[in-house]
Every structure is written in C-alpha cells, then in structure tokens.
Image 1 (cartoon, one colour):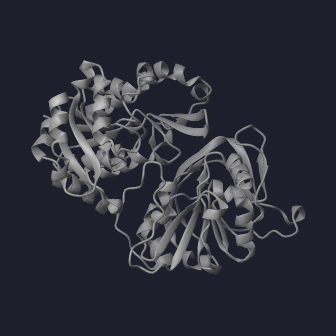
Image 2 (cartoon, rainbow, N blue to C red):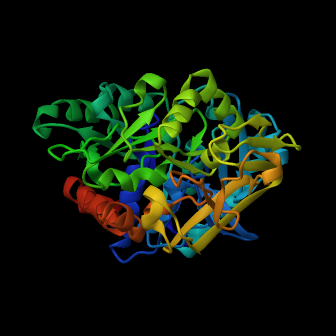
Image 3 (cartoon, rainbow, N blue to C red):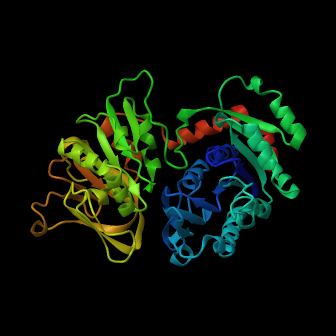
Length: 488
C-alpha cells in the first residue's frame, strides 16, 4: 500500500512552505506514522551531507531538517535534484547526491524530461516504504511561463495524487489576492488538488480577517484551514539561510558577529544557532557601511561560498576586502568557513576551470588548489590546541560535514616571508600565528552543543525541541481532524 502524499504549495517563494512541511512531518510522526519528506528539485546553495547509494551525497538543507523532524534518516531520494547556483544564469546540477557535469551543461529547459524518471523513482520508493510523504513545492505552481516544464509542483502533485495545501505570507500584504490568483491560474483538474488555504505570519486578532476567508471560499470552494502566527523565534533555519539582523530585546549585547553575505554564500543555515545565544548580535554585511563598529571581542565571519573566486572579486569590487584586511591588522577576530577559509589564504589556483584562479586576502599563509573531485563527507574530529580568542575550542570533540572542491595547504617558508599557518586538524583547520584568524573546512561546528558551551557558556534548544515547537504551533492553529482527513 503506497503512502498518502500531502503537498505544500506556495503563492510565492518565502511564503512558508518549508516551515509548514517541517511542522507536518513532525505532526504526522507524532501520530505514530512513518513519514518521509520529498522535494523533487530544490534550488539552493545550502546543502547537507546525507546517505547516497554510492556513499555520501548532497540534498537541500530544508529536506535534511524535514527528515529529522520526521525522525527519518536523511537520504538523497528525499531531494533527488539539487540545483546550486554558480552564476546569474547557471547552476551546478546534483542528481541523487552527485554532481552531474552532463546535466550541468545541458540547457535548463531540456533537463526536465531527463530528470523526471529519477524524480518518480525516488518518490515511488519513498511511498512504498512509508505511511505518509510530505512533499514541498517550489516557488509558485502558477508560473504560467514555466508550467509545461515544471517538475516540482503540479506535475508531482498529479503523479502522487497529492492533497495540497496552498500557503501565503499575509505579512507581505495581498495574501487573499495571492491565494485567489494562484488558484484561478490553475487548470480545473489541478484546482481540485487544493484542499485548503493557509495564511502565514499573521499579527493580531484572527477575527479581523472576516469576511475575507468566507468570500474566498465562496469564490473557490476551498476553506482557509489555518492562520499561523508571525513567529520569529521558531528556531528553524530559513530556507535561504538569511535571516533578519538579530538583536535580542532587553539583553545587553556582549558580542557582535558580522557575517559577510556575498552573492554565492552557502550553508548560511549553520549560523542559526548563534541567534539563540544571549547577548549575541548577528549582523549581515553586504557593503562596507553595513559593518558595525567592532571591538576586539567581536567576530567577522567569511562563510562558505559556491563560487569562491567570484565572491572574492565581489569583496574587492565593493571595498569589503579592504575592510576585512584592516580589521585583521587591528587585531580583530576572523573566522573563515570553507570558501571563506579559501579566501583568507594567499592564493587560489585553478588548473581545471572549476572556480577560477585568484589572489586571496593574504591573512594566513595558505594556498588552495581546486580539483575536479568534490569532497562530500561527514566528519567527527578532535580539535588541536588553539590559542588566542579561539583557545576555548582546544581539544574538543565535534561533528560536522565537508562540501567543497579543492584542497588547502600551508605555504612553505621558501615561498613566503613567514609561514604562519598552524594546522590544527589535518586538511581541515588552521590558525594564524596571532591566534586571531581561524580557518576551517568543517561546516556545522556551531551545531555542536559543546562548542557553544565552550565559546559562549550557553546552551540552546535542540533541533528536536524546535521540531516539537513547530508541531505544537500547527496543532494549535489547525483542525486535527482535517489533517487526518488529508491522509485518509
């Protein structure tokens, strides 16, 4: 008996599809059902390392978290196609966890027919192994210029005979028009797949919405089944990794962490836990005038990057490279993660046309050579002895993951005035001589409770607590019998 499919569609990107799908995964799991998430194709540079047929592979972070919410082991069938943007009109195609150069080089309008069998095979397998599959759509299902090649929304809904919810962000305004307009642009057979409208991010008295839900029902025959509150502190990482600059009310700021948000920044969701540290302020930096006044205890972070050389050029073009270098010269604390680590070094060498050759920021004596092979793996490591502001991380056991193309090594003394890069974990972690500059390939280090305790003396709610909170919120704002009828 194949699993029932519940699908979350959105009127726009950012409407709350990932949030609602994650909450549904935990809610149905709490009913004693075996649940799996699914998204046919995700476009994101925020990925996680999961099990694949040939070892380890990548899926979008949203499906990774949804799997954890469902108490399932994350794996590549849950997101068979991942598109990782590398330029304004180009994306690396990851198929069942592995990079596919052939598909990457194929015009995007020609990919759908090739990808569809992999999507249906993955969905069929998940349906055969579970009681419920919670499917997430992408963007809007009513993009009429894309409908004939849309393999994420309606084609999946039809194939799975999914019972769909359509969610809209009411905080943006125009939510009822978005819901009606989306429904109206669908063919009648697809309109019949919509079983309920959901309003997300509502502030105030729900009774003030009347008579709009009733009018919408009269026009469409579809009920508004839930009005979800505006809730900043739910704890689930945002789909695109970005979040509002975060300053906790009524708590004095003890440390500011400024994260450089370059165009191809990746895996920004790994910093979500820092939002929960009392006294820590997170700030996104896209221009030199957005760099807050930083003292010696504050951090400047260079996160991961899908296109390190392009983002490095962007830093120089916007004057941020000079800002970073000046901060380092003043004794500031810097952290480079993955692509950010590569930027901190002296040189980027590309002999294969993978990313691009470039001069680094020169803040630590490291050289990165790009390779055709991508490193994708989980890591469990013990740090070495760190110095300076990072000393609290010394000799800690922690877990994380690697996703990068290229290998980094210290420059020999013969090639530079001094080799100041201390290798703390082989091929993974380095520190400069001052102890204030730290570079790591390990993503997810701040998702280790022992790391947060060592650096900040703080504990944050676990992911499982976050998932329980999402399901509780959903349960308070939607009829339980309706959720059960969706899978009846």
